[in-house]
Length: 59
Figure 1 (cartoon, rainbow, N blue to C red):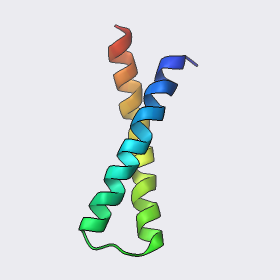
Figure 2 (cartoon, helix red, strand yellow):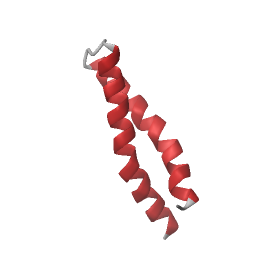
Figure 3 (cartoon, rainbow, N blue to C red):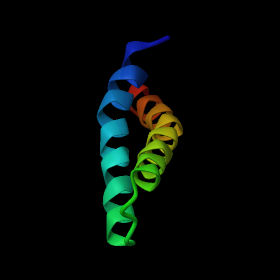
C-alpha cells in the first residue's frame, strides 16, 4: 500500500467524522448511538474520497 492514501485518509477521516457528528447534532440527535453512527458514516465516506484525492495528487 502506498503511503499517500494513508496520509490523506488520516487527515480526511477525522474531518468527515466531525462533520457527520455536527450535522447529527444540528439535526437534533442526542443519543450516543446516533452520534457514533454519524461518525462511522463519515469514516466510511472518507475511504473512497481519500483514495480519489491521493490518486489526483499522484498525477
